[in-house]
Image (cartoon, rainbow, N blue to C red; front, side, top):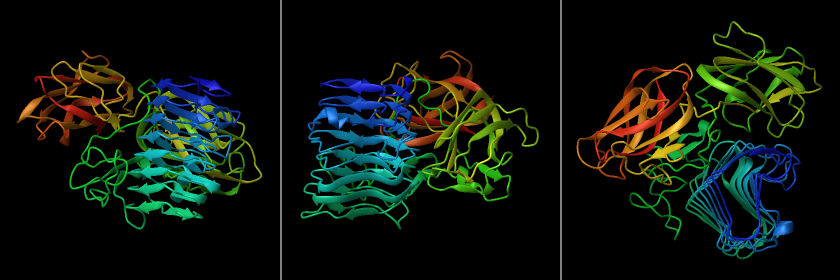
Length: 530
C-alpha cells in the first residue's frame, strides 16, 4: 500500500485491527497524514512496516480524535524513513492532551528518520505506557515526553533500548508543571536522559544504563541492540509489574531484549518488508580527497561535507567490501536543508575500475533522495553530481535496499513469509518436527555464502534431528544440513553452524525444513556468510 499524498490507513471508531501491512511512500503533504492514523479507543495496531513517510509513521489526528485514547495496543511495528518533508513531529507521534489510560506502546522499532525524536508524547498527553521499544538514528532524542508548560501525568518508559544516531537524550521530559506517575526505568542508552523543568512532584528516574558505561550491544551499525555476553545490563534491571515478564537469571535485564531469550522482531512478513542491505563496514571515497567515512558509518547524525561548492563531476564512490545485490539507493542529508544536490547519477562496478553507463539519474532536491535501478549484484557504486550548487554537498548516510532480505543479515524466523507445521511465536518458531518448515522469499546472497548459522533451542539429548536448507521450493535442492545438538531445553538458545554443501549466489527463496526427528528444534534466527 503506497503512493498516497495523504494517510495510508485511517482508523476511527473503536475495536479495529490493523496488522501485517506494508505501507510506504505516503503522507507527502507533510501534515497530520501518517502511514497509520489512529483515532478512538480499543484498537489493535501490530506487526506493520511503515516506510518513507512525509511526516509520522503512526500518528493521532487529535483534532478529530478528542482526548480519550483508551486501551489501544500498538506493538511490534517497524517505522523508518519518516519525517521527509516536515521537521515538527516524529515517527511515532501523539498529541495533544490525550488520556491514554490502558494504552500500551511496546516492542516497536523506529529508525533512520529525518526528524528529531523517535517516540513523541506531546503537549500534556498522559498515561502512556511505553516499554521494550527500540530507537536509533532518530536525531536529537529517542523518546520525548513534552509537558509544554502543562502536565505529564502517568507517562512511563521501561526497558527500552536506544542506539546510535541520537545526539541529545535517550529520554527527555521537559516543561511539565506536574509529573505525577511519570516513571523511566530499565532503559539502556548511548546518550543520557534529560529531565528539565518538572514541577512538584517530579518523575521517577532510576535503574537505567547510560553513558559512560558501554551497554554491550551486538551491532549498533545495523540496529542489533540486543545484548552481548558480559553486558552490564544483564540482570541489572528492577522488577516492573506487567512489564518485566519472562525474566532469565537473577533479575530482569535492562533494555528491550532479555539476554538468553529469543530475539523479538517488528514489522510485517510480506514481500518488501525486509529489504535493507546489511552494512558490513562499507568504505566511501570522495573525489575531492576529503574523508567521506561519515557517509557510510551507519550513524545518521554524522555528516560528510564536500571540500568545495557543488559542481558537476564531484563524486562519492562506495566500496561494499563484497558483492551485494542492490536495487535502490537512498542519499540522506539528515536535517541539512541546503546540502542535498540538485541532481546526480548512480553507476555500478564489479571491480572499481570499469564503470558502465549510469543505472539511475535523479533530479530535484529533498532531504532524502532516491535512486531506483534494475536489481544487480555489484561491489562498487559511484554517485556523481550533474548540476552546480551554491553550497557544499552534504551526505549523512547512504543506505541500500534490494527486493528481499540480505542473507548476511539476521533473518529472524518468526516473520518468515512461509510457515507450515509449526507456530509463529512472538520471537521464534515453535518446536519443529520432521516435515515442518518456514521460509523467506527472494533472499539476496550477492556473490555468495558457504556457511550458515542458526540460533536454536532443542530439548532432549545428543542430535535431536536435522534442519535442511532448501532453495526455491520446500522440496528444492538441499544446500545445507545442520545436525541439531540438544541445547539443554526448549527455551535454552544456542548458535550452531554448518558449512553449506556448495556456495550459494544470487537471489533465492530459502526454506528451513526439519527432518529426522519429531522434536528437532525451535529456531530464533539464521544467517549466511563465509
